[in-house]
Image (cartoon, rainbow, N blue to C red; front, side, top):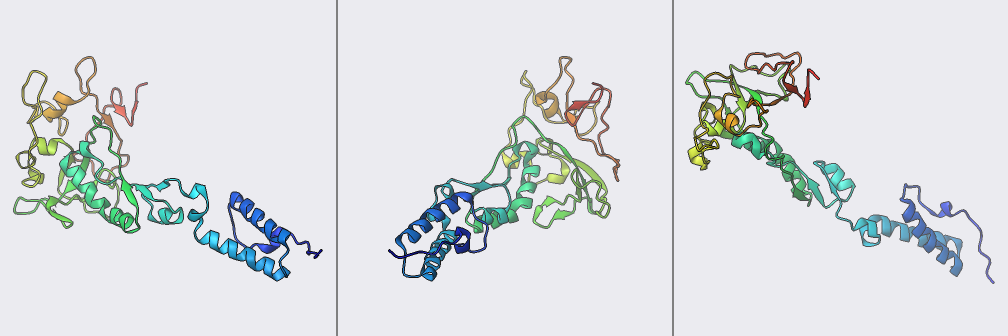
Length: 276
């Protein structure tokens, strides 16, 4: 009977990091090779190396855990490294932000979306909860002719120089007009979104109060943008009929004009009432 030299199994493996389940399978295959006792110790090592190289190059052809519908979220590099097949990407996922807000996020996300599609990913998205209407502040530049500076990515849209997410960035232009982006822009045909996102052009039906009155236009005794009648008609109110928005604070604001002052004694700030 031919004698086989005893060597630690790690001696046969290339210096690489592998899944423990993968090593178990390699160990089983290598054990069969040693049991059959090929002609030389070098042939043992060569046979095991071929197994390792083939399986590490295409593990999805051999292991059940590579066949799950793996997915990532908005990360093309991770998609590639994880051999994922689909990606959760927030492409045009904000219908309750109004036509302008949704179109702007679509433009911002287009590059990442295209990168994922070119990588072969099946791209899925999510929808922000309906009923949870985001309104965010924006700074714009009104031109001498009365119009607004346009967005280079889509010249039919205004350029937002600052938004709630970049409000305190020191080196951004401050603009000369403040607007709030939300569903009220199109409902009330605000000047900076016309004519591209006008309610008539988009076929947007007029919102109504429960008694049938149209909820278009502005209330005279409230502050913009919460004076939009659509929020009075459709927004969530307390038992006294008072609209109950939720505020996100802007601490150390570079610009304060146009911001909405929340009352810390009664308003919800980031989901928590300040007077609890």
